[in-house]
Length: 319
Image (cartoon, rainbow, N blue to C red; front, side, top):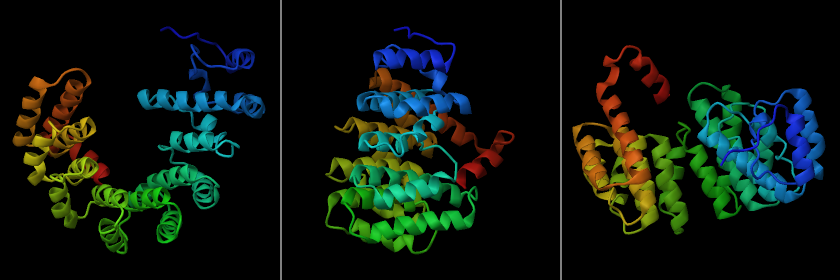
């Protein structure tokens, strides 16, 4: 359905003010807001009904996920101190790709002090990107250390399980030696959700010691464990997982199928490509498109540094 387009942010705001709705509106004018336009949005923000603020941030988040050319960070930041918890959580989620270090103290404050657990959990999740940037030497070591210390404090505390799970998953990017025993302890935890997060964390941590537990969990009788292990096998690029992943492309759980397909593309090699081609024959729709993408990635992995410049790109990716 064609959306109603606007030449300026002011024109878009006028319609939103009148209708108190965004259905059928093109929201791209909110991308890369200049200061004067941002000030106009900020002035209206408190007067909009909560349903409109929620819908707006959810919609721009969906748009940004599908279109890398837009950037709604300035708009999303308006929601970080919103009185509505759902708005705050969505605002944090929308900023997941931002590399602005000014967000670090805001996210830490929300993780530690927000009255609502879903917001604290989303903030813990959002801090993972900054741990990753620290491991890539794209964040000052002192800042990365601050993020890691804050996550570790939450993980060692008594906050809700969901908050501690997200803290574990985020800090798992870190190469600090104390992370290994923390993941091991989480993997032995009595709560299944925490154990699932531990398997997820193994994939992010990229230590070779996680190969054995990840391979074992690929054949778990728990769907959530198979899913997390399938994803982790791709992160770890476990060639020994290809056979099990090929079986999981037929798993009863669709998300596990998708994770297995993605991981086969990450691992590459002739065996992985053969498994993907076989699954393609019986797949349809979006799943077939996902297999096409995985095959393209697997073929690229097989070419390796023979492509000029690929070696440098791979190195940057590995960091």
